[in-house]
Each structure stands twice: as structure tokens, then as C-alpha cells.
Length: 70
Picture 1 (cartoon, rainbow, N blue to C red):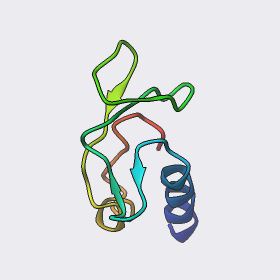
Picture 2: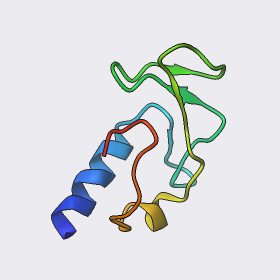
Picture 3: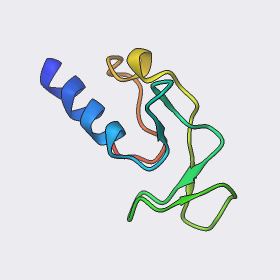
């Protein structure tokens, strides 16, 4: 499980909508999971950030990334 947690953290850290200052998935932005492009407006193929605090979400194996990155 620890390996999966680290894998999730790495994915989030490289995501265009990761807010490192607050350690959360920015719920005000949208990401294209195929190429990591970011938008502040909804676009076709873009997924809205969930706004979750990642230190709580990442270790919970029942949770998933809204962009299906994990």
C-alpha cells in the first residue's frame, strides 16, 4: 500500500492542477488527462479538479482521481 501511496503522490505532484502550496487538487481548474493541459474554463475532454486535500484522499484506496490518473 505504501508503494501505491507514493505512486499517487508522484502523479499528483506532476499534474497541472496540483496546488502544492495547499496540497490539494485545484477545484477551480480543469485538466486534460491525456496531455496535462490546464484550463480555467470547461472544455471538451477536460476534467474539473476535485478540490480535495490530497494528504487525506491519496491514502484512501477507495478514492480515485477524477481525471482517472489513479
